[in-house]
Image 1 (tube, rainbow, N blue to C red):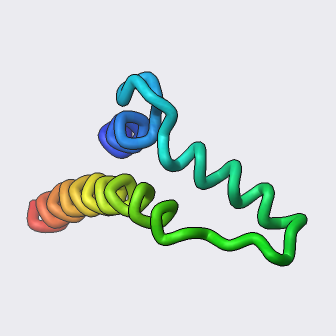
Image 2: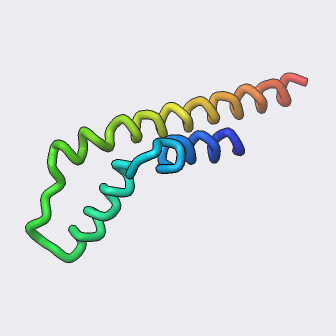
Length: 77
């Protein structure tokens, strides 16, 4: 689980990127959208967020595969 936490932190944290993250921008816009029926998420917003979502997916997939392998070894013993 520590791998998952570290991977997520690195993929989403501005401390690791040195700039404001697309995720933070998206969260801000999402909060604004709650109170504005005319709010639209732009293609640029989605394009900026997709690399982070894909990285997060890859981190979660990697951690899950490691956990599955660990449990397969435990069952085989």
